[in-house]
Length: 311
Ligand SMILES: [Zn+2]
Image 1: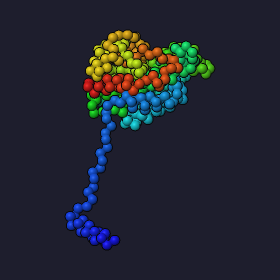
Image 2: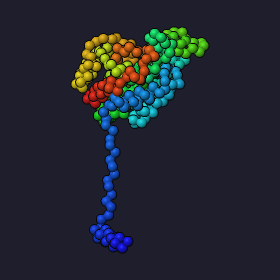
Image 3: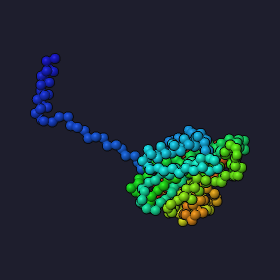
């Protein structure tokens, strides 16, 4: 033990003589979140997060919970939120809007519906079951939520709204199927009830509206859509080509869609429907998680992010 006593005093001497001491290490700087669209994160967090609520038709408890989930995710991404609530034929409807870079410039709206179809009426064996909606429409919502996470407001030259539309997907179903409580309304519902309400009540004129619907199919084929704005469509497909996505963003016309872009097109607003309608599981019980891929979400997300940040 002796030797250690001597060493102890020697150590004290050295320590006090140099006047130094333990040097405080600088606080570790937090690694910033890479602000680039991550398809894997969009798939594993946001598509799965929505699918955990089960089928999510307009007016259901599951859809209300999905809306609350979307609001919570937007808040976590520090995006300001607003809601728009109304009743359509006795069914409560809620649109959710996240707003980035308010006041920065003309408003751009990116939209996706978050409800799922009440009946899988394209399903030959289970037409009365609900659609689970991994692609239609958890995929579009996941793209918007991932954009909320990664978009850098400092890089935006426009105010950007991320609009989550309710009640898109019960078109052509009888009101008595959707809300059977007497006296039920037997008239058929139309598509895009939520988007129409938002378009009807706009106090500004957006410079562009882009809808993302059914864009998550692992076998992705997105064509020009006939009712969409031709110039804006070409701009988006040119970005996709630069990013190496020519096999998935096919610069040819194929489908004419009645979708959430329709109410904006009808009001003379420049709008595009990004949709992959070559999806064999559309409005069937087979629209499940295994059909959607993170790589497909990432292509759409990166095209939109590049377009927004390069304007
Ligand atoms: Zn649908």
